[in-house]
Amino acid sequence: MTRLLLMEGNVAARRARAKALGMRTSSGIYAEAILAHFPAFEIDVVNAADPDFAIPNGRDFADYDGFIVSGSALHAYDGDFAVTNQIDLLRQAAEAGLPCFGSCWGLQIAAMAAGGQVEYHPRGKEVGFARKIMPTIDAQGHAMFRYKPPVFDAPCIHYDEVTRLPDGATLLASNAHSMVQAAIIPLGKSRVWAVQYHPEYDVRHVGAIYRLYADDMIGPDFFPDQAALEAYCAKLENLATNPSNAGAAWELGIDADILDDKTRRGEIIAWIETEVLGGP
Image (tube, rainbow, N blue to C red; front, top):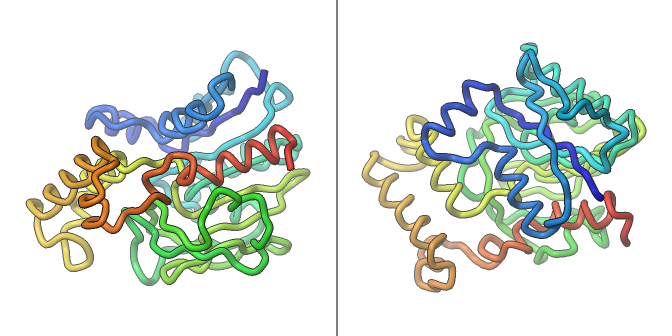
C-alpha cells in the first residue's frame, strides 16, 4: 500500500476557526484531492505547528512513500516554533529520502530550508486565482506540467514571496505577480516539487477563502464593500454547483484549467506518478 505523510501547515487555533466557519482544513482539502485520484492510498496527517505534535500511529519516515506540505497562514521568515518545527520536519523528511511536494507554504518553507529567502510581497497579496502562469524554458518536458496547458490559471492565496531561490533550485514557472510560481528545490537526499499556488483547492474553497479573509479583501484592490464580496462568492458557489454553466464561467474568467479536476490538480498527480510511484 502507498502511504503518504501530509503536514498540516496551520496552528490549532486557525484550524478551529476554519471548522467553526464550516471550512475544510488545509490538510483535509489536500487529502480529498489526492484520494479523488488515488483512492487506495493511505494518508496520515501530522500537525507539526502544534507543540505536542506526533507522527500518527507511532510511525516514522521509513513507513511513508512521500511527504506533502499543505498551505498555511504562517510566515516562513518568522522564528516561532510553529514555523521552525515545520521547516525542520521537512528537512528530516528530505534527509530520509522521501519525495516531497508543497504548495504555497510548502514552496516557501522548502526555500527557507534549503537556504533561500522569503519576504512579504512588495506588490501585495495574490488571492483567488493566479492568472497566466507560464512555465519557463527549464520546464519544457518536465513532468510537473504534463497535465497543464501552455499557460494556465490556478487557485491561490499568498501574501509572501520567494525572493531568492536556494542554490541548485530550478525555476519552473512565473507570472506577472510572482517570479517564483513553481520550482524544484534540492533538499537533503531528496528534492521538493513546489508551487506557489494551490492545485488542491477547488472553486468552492476559493469563495470560502475570500470570506475568511474578508477584512483584507474589502478595499481598492479587491471588493469595494461586503456586499460586493458576497455577490462574487455567490457566483463562485453557483459555478461550483453547476460547473457546466458556460456563462457563469465566462463571467468569472474561469476555464477548464480551474474547473477540470485533473487539470487543476495536475502537478500533484504528476508528482505522485513520477516521484512516488516511479513512473516516467
